[in-house]
Image 1 (cartoon, helix red, strand yellow):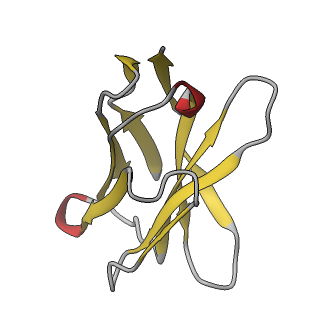
Image 2: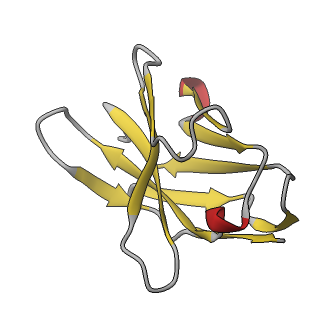
Length: 119
């Protein structure tokens, strides 16, 4: 069974950095695009960043541009989110997700990892 497992969350002071990882398991795993989303308490889930797995083309929410970097290691079926200059408003549960093809929505989600940024 294919699964996504996030790791790397934690508590960090404002201005600090964290790197999140999302590892996909399962022999049949494939993805067109992988994305990171986040959800803060009382707020809707929002898009953070995504990467096309073949070309490496990346997309970012305006709120994280120049601070976050998404990358992938196709050999390891792993996607990363390097976060720097973290702000208290980045506090949220972060989820990775898989989009299997460009014509369907993200269809596989991880369980999430908590990022807390203290001021």
